[in-house]
Image (tube, rainbow, N blue to C red; front, side):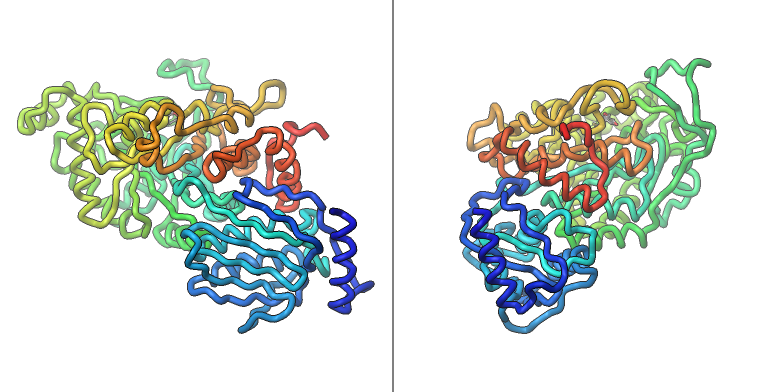
Length: 543
Ligand code: TNX
């Protein structure tokens, strides 16, 4: 193969009249794409992509794809690629092929150029991400190569799951707009199509809500932060705190900016506004939201908190619906996540408003008070054209047939949801919690607990225990980055990579998973990580 490539490359270079001028980066000779494409057919020869290769946008809505190619041009040659109106020799052509499904693509590299046919611009975007992995990784970031060699081939590819997500908890620790954008770049490279943004929690409210300014003026800052492992409720003098006030939030303008940046990468953003639990930052801002009306501080430690919204009072629903109305406006995607996890009912049981609500609604179990609230918020969101997602706790008691379940306490919630006809996203702690340690030993940063090495991530089967009929209800999978112990973006990348590359083979190429082959391919991918300057768990590879 190698000599064929070389011969063709020389022929190509001669054809371009460029032989001998400038630096040419040779192709690797070995194909290594993650996630593994559905079919790869190698052909003889290679194509030399150069700064003179034009892009032909022959598909409506594919401008963002052309801009993604521009980024490739900038990384390789130090400048974007130019546009041409009609296919010419050496061009990269983007065109629609109605025979292909929405996210599917066919990428053909021949000595004459690159042809990208796709069912939609999203498919073409994924073809570009594949292309990036076919280019010599060393060339990325150099910005001064003249030509980059790509082997001739045809790749036909499409994902097996329609939901491929990553969640970022921006509440426990805050990540700037720039960092979120860099995260979105990483997700795009891995063909992730959903970014779940956890925006509120006990330790901080991170999204500007015009109607309730105290949420960000007051609720976005905690006066200090626990350092070290959380003892779970017992906070005595042995606990150490960083006494620096910690805060941050996104303005509505910044949210719009991130949503647009994600859309350019064919990533839908799902906002999460926690209700009725994980709410201390909201209650600290507006004490009337809680059962007792007491003034709280924004939480400074982790773990679960008893202080939750009061679903007995109408004013609580007025508040959360006003918040969700602004949120629904900001995020054009189909989903709004309302949390729903880990909601203790301690305060409800002693609250006259909650008791009155139980009576007036004819509820007999306390958990039904949460079911009542979820159903009410779902009606509100549906009326605004949105669908509700909640963590699997919303299945306790009863759930409406139309809510989507995010299964985190194992896959049981997702299985139960699928059996009763609710859509589900599989994100079990056992395989998808990237806040757990990926290695043991000295030098490993403090993590939440749990051990999730990359081979375990790879082994995840989200459809185990489901009949083919039930599998239809599994929309996909998601990795979760909870950030109690992840305080900066470098550390965040370390926790994410390379585990994300393992998970995406489940989301995109489940039937083609092969651990040994993945190991070979990820070795190539990490050189692209290096070239892009991403931080990852390097020690997982023997040099
Ligand atoms: C459980 S997963 C939580 C989070 C924590 C996480 C730590 C879920 C819905 N709730 O509040 O950050 O565990 O792994």
